[in-house]
Image 1: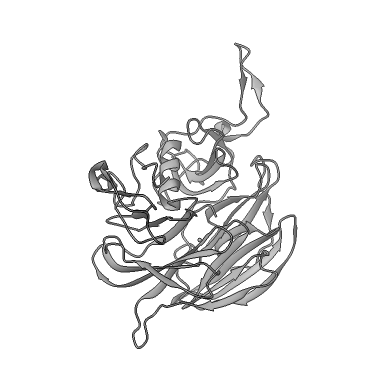
Image 2: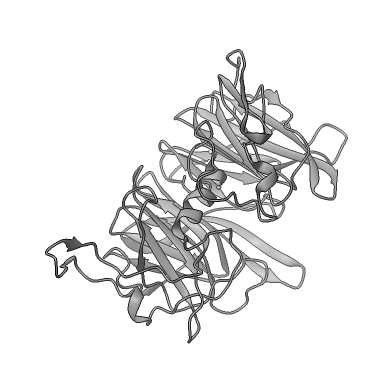
Length: 381
């Protein structure tokens, strides 16, 4: 749950950047076929001199029809996107890389397995990408593949087994949430860690089966993950973990349930809880903590439009909730974004989440929640 939802308004930033990758398009994790690792345009090579003497960056063209599944940032300008594009010989998975915040993209090879989904893929499949440095990255799914040469080679590596739902690099450790796919869905949820350079995986703890999406959120050296109605927090890559209760669910009621958590700087957390709903809508409640989950304060109630949601934060007062349908929501400390692109000034919020608005052009978003390229408001991105 540091870069998937990536930075301020994480979900919005992911989809906006992914969309820039495809002028070469980039919706969500819709797992459409893409280029195989063997496809010539994807092969990464050192920078070469073009006939006019201009140095060309490594990689090749990004295939037309590229659709993004996951994004990872290694700086404010450099990102890698895992996705797929039509190709002659499956699997068609590929990777796109930008060095200028999405202005231009180059294609790179990916592990030779298809895109998939944690709840539906039994055989080899991938759905996530994370890079610790521009050279050292991880692609994960029903397996783990690692590169140390910026994506030119992707050997498979040992992992805890099952489906790897989430992976983040923080505190000089790699953290991962894994689960097994059984007849009744995902079971045996586990949080594990290992050193970035390799070595055995160490099991940290079992997680409750109703742990939201199983996503790890990391920022400023802090990582947090939902564990049923609690959150687990670590500031040292999982060497030590603290468990804190949350205000969800309410006493005497099964709702709301904890859906996702996001660190805010080095001591803050933002928590999204969702309750009952109807088609395309769920009740939403946001809480914030200034002491890594020891205490919580009600921050607000975003509108019900949108199923479930993932919360992301990049700066004090800036939160975003991205949902699977209908709408997504963001809050900023000084302005409120409204449908149609209008923004009205508001008094500075006493705490993050006091005022929520729908990002501009939200009515133009597709059913996957992906905005057209260039429509992500700067107040959220």
